[in-house]
Structures are given as C-alpha cells and as structure tokens.
Length: 188
Image (cartoon, rainbow, N blue to C red; front, side, top):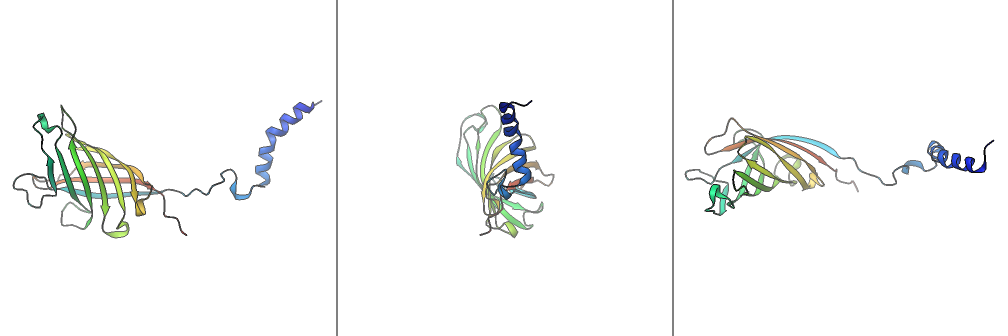
C-alpha cells in the first residue's frame, strides 16, 4: 500500500511530464523566450597586400612605428588591403581589410593583426566583420572573428588563410575561407 509520502513523491516526479503532454503552457514551454536562429555563411575571397617596400606601386600599408630591435619587434603598420573574388587585384573588389599589424614576436616573426573587413559590394555591402589573429612565417593559419555589423551582427567564426601560388613580390595574395555564424536582423 502506498503511503502519502510515496504518492507525493510520485506526483512531483510525474507532474512535469503530464503538464508537457497536456501542453498547458502552449508554445512557451520549455523556453519562455523567442530565440532567433543563427545563420551560417561561408565566403571565399582573396586578400591583396601591396607591401610597404621600395619599388612597390600602389602600396596599401604604411609603417607608423619603426623598430631597431632584432627582427623588428614592436614595428607597426596600418593597412587597407583589398578583398577580391579572384587572384587578380583588378577582379571584382568586394571590400577592404582595414586595420593594423604589429610585430609581436621577439624571437620569431609573428605579426599580431586586428582589422575590420568592410564589405563594399554585393548583398553584404555596408556590413563589417571584426578579425584578429597572428600571421607568422607559416604559409597558412587561422584568424578569429569576434563581431560585426549589418548582415553580420553578433557574428562569430573563423577565417582560414593560405598563401596563394599567384603571389608576386609586389602583390602578396592570401586565399581566405571565411566561415561565420550570425544572427539575422529582426523583422519589425
């Protein structure tokens, strides 16, 4: 025979399942808020760096802090690199990568970079993505995406980069594979 305490325990254990089955809370159970889903977007483009070296026409970076330290520790450049859909710098410019890079390694080449990817063409025009990470001696790597605006509000993700075979002494090209998660704009 069941005691009152056993019945009470059984009731507390089964009550949530009965309420869910009865759907008395409607559409708000179990989450009382309307959470928007994230969109996933993959982009493929090319970065064109025209280095601040003698004889390089159309430079898109300039030294702002020079260093006498070994391997240039502390040296800093500001940049306004091109983003295109192809390996040619004249091919469909879709935006720019604007920011700075700083030689942060004392014993090895390691450039810390912080920049804003500003889209100027296509469906993402006017939107931005905030990017940071390291660029070293390896031909490939990864940067983190920590924010954005417009279409890319509340964005997070990564950019995988690889040095392109099409690079020259005057156009250092990196192939970018961009993978982002972002919250769509709310419809009011």
